[in-house]
Every structure is written in structure tokens, then in C-alpha cells.
Image (cartoon, rainbow, N blue to C red; front, top):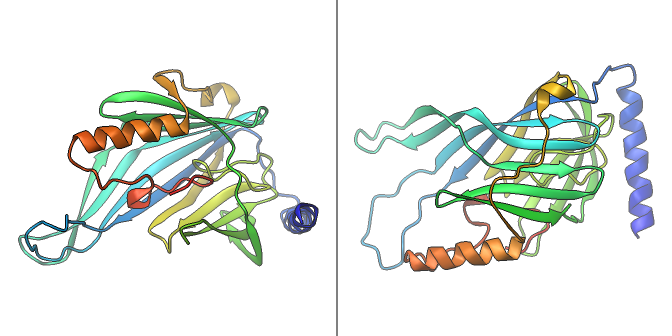
Length: 258
């Protein structure tokens, strides 16, 4: 089965590469992504009744810097939050602010290892893991994103959450935003849980390797994924939020249980 899947992937990749033949692509550069999360307001079962609130939409600029050996996915500068205008009841209003975040995902393409820098309660942690293994299914659909012919792949996790990814086989570097980096090409668009979380490439630009600073993050205590999740769950319980579960609010990580 694995050989058949590899053969099918190869056929789709060759077809897409032929379509993009003649397109000059640098092996070093930056891809700017827009990451959108839709969050629904939740209340505890024992909380008093409150007026129903529309979902809150949060858009964040993300930058994927890439070289032939590694990629680094990190926060950009702009964050836009759209919230219900409760006092006047006249719809939504937007609020923009600078991000300045320190979330980073470093993917060593040579060693096949990922290091994530995460911030929790004003402390930094480094979570190390292998590249996630995802059971992707090719749909045969294609579309063009930023001039690149992309193939559609889909996966469903144990909780029934569907993830759709569009990847460009002709891109000279294999990778993608966050942990969505395990397809034969560059992932340029991702949709999780019917768009509750969406990641979309908005621009690609070449850049010299010495300008990119694609280096592994070093700040923070090193933990495994399980150690980090156990630590967060314990802290949330101490704060009275014992209903917290990993993967809430659209923070789904491929290859990890929910």
C-alpha cells in the first residue's frame, strides 16, 4: 500500500512539475502566510445565561523562511481581531495590533526533526519531535496558488477532524507552515475543521540565505510533546480550568492525538 501511495504521489508531482516548467524558483526565500482562526465563545455548564455571541475571528501574519536545508515558521508583525460589537449590536469591528510573538517552528530538512519554540505563562519551552506522520489521501484536484500548480490532499484524524492541504510539487524546497510539512512539495494552503483554522500563502519572494537567519531556536526548556502537554494541563487545572483539552480552539497539530 505504501509503495502504491508513493507511486501515485510521484505521478501527481511529475504532472505538476511539467505544468510549472520554465518558472524560475529560488531555493532560498520567504513565504508570507495569513493564518486565520475562528473561535466560538464557550461558557461553563454552571455559568449564568448570557447573550449569544458571534464567533471571534483572529488573523495573524506568519513568515516561512526557507533554504535547501531547513525552514523556519514564525510570527509576522500584524494581527487582526474581529469581535462582536456587543454594546451597540451593529455587527463586527476590527482591531489591528503588532504581533511581536515568539512562536517558532524550525524544520531540519536534513535530519527530519522539528523544534518548536512555544510560550506559556511568560516562559519559553522548546518541544522537539520527529516530522509528523499523516495519512494523506490525494483527491486528484488541482488549482493554482501564487502561480504554482498545487495538488489537493486530505486527511482525517481519530476525532473526525478533516484537514485539507494544497501543495506545490514544483517548489524546490519541501516543507510548509507549522507542522504541515510532510507532503512532496511546498504546502501553500491548509484548512482544518471546515475552515475553523486556515493558513493561506499570500506572497513568495526570493532572498539570500544570509538575510533569512534560518536557525534553530535555543531559548527555553527542552521538553517532549507529552511533557509539554502534561505541564500545560496541570497548570490549567491549578487555575481552575480542568476542562481544558489539548487541541482546543483550533490548535490542532497533525500527527498528535486530540
